[in-house]
Amino acid sequence: MTNYISRAEADELCDGLIMEFAGKNKKLPDSIDIDRFVRDYLKCTVVYETIAEADKDCIAFASDGKRAIKIRINGIVSDVIYPKNTIVLDKYLLNKNENNRRRFALAHEAGHILANRINPDSPAYFHRFNDKERDYTIEDFRERYNLNEWQANVFAAALLMPRCVIKEVLNKFNDGKTIPVYGENVFRPREKTILNKIADSLQVSYTALVIRLKTLNLLNRRDISEYIQKELRLGGE
Image 1 (cartoon, rainbow, N blue to C red):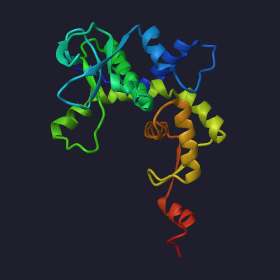
Image 2 (cartoon, one colour; image 1 turned 90 degrees about the vertical axis):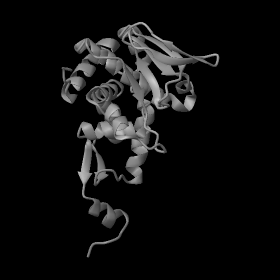
Image 3 (tube, rainbow, N blue to C red; image 1 turned 90 degrees about the horizontal axis):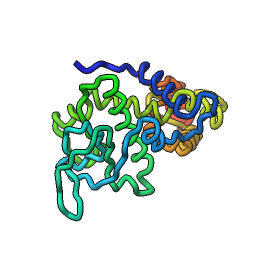
Image 4 (cartoon, one colour; image 1 turned 180 degrees about the vertical axis):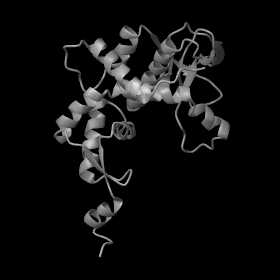
C-alpha cells in the first residue's frame, strides 16, 4: 500500500529541504533554483528529449530504471529505459514562454522522486498537462488525479513556493497582508496586479500561485455580494 503523505507533511518536509539546500543561515530568493535543487541536492539527472507517447499530454517522466518511455530521435520512435532518478522533460518546455510550466513539471517529477524515497515501491509516472480542447475519458481523469499525482503536485507547489518564501513575497508586495478574494475566485484589479507581480517573482503561473495561497489560507475570503455592490455598484437596496 502506498504511504499517504499529507499536505502538512509535504509542506514541512519541503521547507526543511529547501532550507538545507540553500543553507540554513541564508535568505532564500523569491525564485527557488529548482534546476540546481534537482541536480545538486537530489542528485538527479535531467535530460530533454522529444517524448513520443501516444498520450500527447505526457510532458515529463521520472524513471524508476525499469519502465520504458517512447522517445523520438531523428524521426525514429524508440522505447528507452533511463537509469533510476533520471527526469525526462519534453524539449518544447525549453521554449522561453514555457519556463513556468517547465519549472512546475520538473518540481512535479522531483515530487515523485521524493515520494519514492518515502515509499520505495512507487512506480515511475508521467507528468501530464490538461488540454482544454480535449475530451477526456473517466479513465484519463483517474490516471491524472490519482493519489501519486496529487502528492507530486503538492510537493511541486511546496518546493517552488515554500511557506517562508510566500511570507516574504507577501511582505514585499502586499505589506504582509492576506489578499482579498470575493467568493472563491474573484479578485479586484489591484489584487490581480499584485498576484501577477508575485507570480512573476516566484517564476510560477498565476493559477499555481492562487491555488497555493488558498491552500495556505492566505486569501481573505469575502462575500461575492460585497464585490457586486462595492466594485460593480450593482444590486443591494
